[in-house]
Structure formats: C-alpha cells, structure tokens
Amino acid sequence: MKKEDLVRTLQEQLHAVQSERQGAKRDPALLAARIALKQFQSQRLAGTHADLLAAPNSREAALFFLEELYGAHDLSQRDADLERIIPTMQRLLPVNALQTITEAIVLDALSERLDTAMARALGTQFTPDDYVAAYRACTTAPDRTRQLALVQALGMSLCELVRIPFLNATLHMMRGPAKLAGLGDLQQFLERGFTAFKRMKQAEQFVTTIVGREQRAMENIYAGTSAPFDVA
Image (cartoon, rainbow, N blue to C red; front, side, top):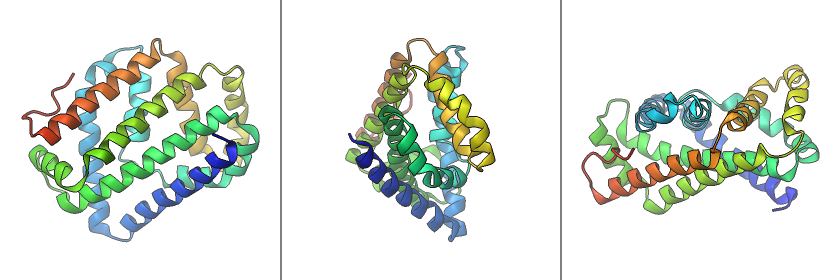
C-alpha cells in the first residue's frame, strides 16, 4: 500500500477512535462501564496468556499487547500526538513502519467500537457469564474475526519491522526531539513495541500463539461452550 493510502486510512481511523473516546467522556456512566470492561479484559488476557507473561523471552511483548493494545489507561494523548506528527511520519518513516502504526490504529478503532457496545449492556458490575452473554449479544463473529486478523497483521508487521536496518537507531534519535515537541507518549509506544519484538526469539510463534488462543476462545463463546477461555 502506498504511503498516501496509509495516511488516509490512519487519519480516518484516528478520528473514529477519538469519536468513541470523546463520546464516552461526555457520558460518565458509559466511561465508567468502559473502564470496568477494559480492566476485566486485561485481567482475562493476563490469565489466558500467563505463560507468555512469565517467560523471560516473551514477557515484554506480552505486556506491550496487554497494556498498549488492550489496556484500560487513557490513550487520548498518544492519539493526539499521532495526529500531529502524521506529516512528519509520512516523510521520514519507511512504508513498513507507517503500515504498522496504521494497523495499530485500525485495530484500536474496531476494538473501541466493540467495547462501547458491550459496555452499554454491562455497566460497571458484571460477572464472567454476563461478559460472555454480552459478547454474543452485542458483537458479531465477523467483527471479532476481523479484530483477530488485525491483531495478527499487527504482530507480523512488528516482526518484519525489527528487521529493517537502522530503524532502532532512528527511533533513539527521535527520542529527544519527540520529548521537546510534546510527543513523548507516542515515542514511548513506538519504542516499546519495537524493543519488545527486537529482543524476542521466535516472535512469529508468539503472535501465532496469542491469535490461536483468542480464536479458540471466540469460537467457544459463540458456540456456547462452558469455560470458553480455557484455551492455553
């Protein structure tokens, strides 16, 4: 995909993400419900992938996925940083790196929409059975399949990204200017993902393992299987 197409997609999806988050901020009940949902999902993922979090080889990458892609903390500043620096990224970053960032935001936009739908149904107090019921009632299998496809695409893009010569040095060189420009959150996100995958052996297997488990969990939920998250 050309840089111009990636930038257009990136801008569209950033606006979608910002719309979801700003809408929640205007509705305190929805915001609280979304936070509760994200906390539940983060804890569930940590349980499902406990072995990856415990293993020295994969711990950093697993934490990156859980905290940066599924975490409950507010990412509004990172998104604002990203929107400000899009023209610079288009000019300086290789297409592979720009594609990876775009894939992360496309995934983010879809996940935010699905989370909002579930949060409206669940509120702040719910059980795991309530969560499973809302998952089936409020989201569709095609949307969840696309979500997993985006997770896999992002993971594999990171695997490819770490092989680009001099990209690590470029990210380090950007650290000071990024901080001065008020882009520290974005710089941390980029460096953290790159470093985690750079240090990991068999990164492709790590991605395949996560996606495979989540695929089985999704299939279990829609099939009505008891203990749907027992997939490790």
